[in-house]
Image 1: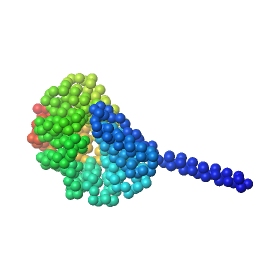
Image 2 (image 1 turned 60 degrees about the vertical axis):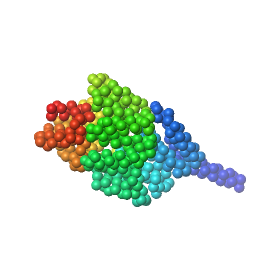
Image 3 (image 1 turned 180 degrees about the vertical axis):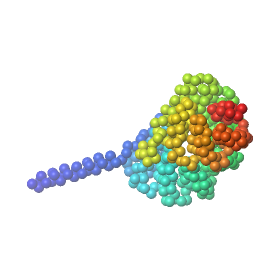
Image 4 (image 1 turned 45 degrees about the horizontal axis):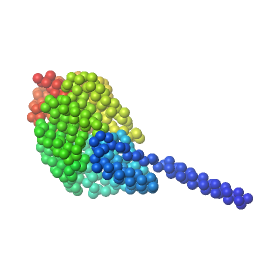
Length: 442
């Protein structure tokens, strides 16, 4: 009798331990592995060091699934890998899985909260990212990084005064490449292009040569030079980036825009194809669409435009509360559908984005431009008036606004906006916009 009771107790104990092992294993999500890079970025010494570090972290986690420090470090590595490879679909989700596991067990982990907000903002989940960043700042109100996240979220949601306030706090704590970059963007959207260039120069100077973040800061500076018609200065920045970080895809794409401006379309296409080999980036195909159109290659232009739509479509139209955190891309899809003359699909995506963030000037510009393409000029003017509220002097924004006001019966305002745009830059780089301006205004 006692022997049978003993055996029953042993069996019950074993079942309990088995259940614990099963459920603990079930509750711990599998850790995503690192993917091999492609193209020239797979040949750098930096990649060998990064891969070795990631594999070391994976080994630590495999040995101890409750090593939350290693999981946080791995999530940070995956966030950076997403930036470098452009494979946000894979690495963003991999990082979120790790961060959610960390936060489930350490809900007050400040660094994990900041990393999660970073991923959500990267995926364009701006409202959710803001909420997470606001949780983080309560834990540590003395971190410059978290104020940068709060700036980004507020900017994208169209809360510009709040964004300025957060950036002031950020630069007050730590003036560096990240804070200067945000100052530059805020100055740009408020119409201070010289001030934006000045801040962008400080950002580049504050960065370490060759790092991806520093090269990206150079891309912003180059962009500002392009906006203001200083293409030689833009070209210099792109070439400097390539010297510091060979084959940097965004620098090749920048040089492609310069060659496009010069009318050297074959070289521009070659540069974009080179950039396309290294990372996943829809904008390269979008630029290729314009170049194929300019060269009269209708078949390639259509193929490239459809590729952009395919790249962006699978992750659009997901609710903010959805568990399947994809990258919201409705604003980008609106412009992509305009290039294939599907204005109904363009409007659908533009309005979807508008429902998420009706105060953002870029979103309002997008809705306005779609309505313009549908010939609904009064509706277009309603949204464009909101897009102009920060006094942004981007020539393409002003050019679109000029067309909308002119076509909606406000010819004097339209002409004044066009003069303002051409003062900033006499040449419109957007192919469709340039054609429309020439047609309407001569």
